[in-house]
Image 1 (spheres, rainbow, N blue to C red):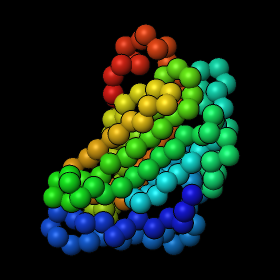
Image 2: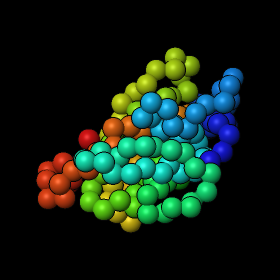
Image 3: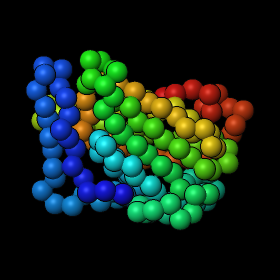
Amino acid sequence: MSEANAGPLKLSDGQSFEMAPAAPTPIVSGGWITVYPEETVMVEARVEGARLVALKAVSELRAPERTLVFQLKQEATLAEGTGMVLKVESPFAGVIKYRLAMMLPSGDAKLVATSACPLHQGKPVFESWPQPIYQILATDFRVVEAGSKAAQICD
């Protein structure tokens, strides 16, 4: 867990973008997990019914069997250095689906929905985008049947 400070990000016009929130930003709030570039965010949770609940940001990996790990980075090899990669790891048995939204450095602070691939226990998932992103938000974590169509598709 680190202090929120998105940037500097390389933009497609060669400029850079840096964003530092005016006040500390909670990592987990109202079921949303916030990840900024160059952060590793760890969130403990538990399965209740078909949902992940009791999301709690932690600063170190004390309970790997119940901790989701998110890493967002700008990747030098994507889109001339402006692309982004999100790595997500899940320790939970079964298949976890979730929703992602992102904020772009366009200045309007609008959330843009983006696809998310299912999480399988112990297998990292890599999401990538060709543009800089200064914030990723993840929410709606739910367990789906391993043999279902939902467990096979990114949406």
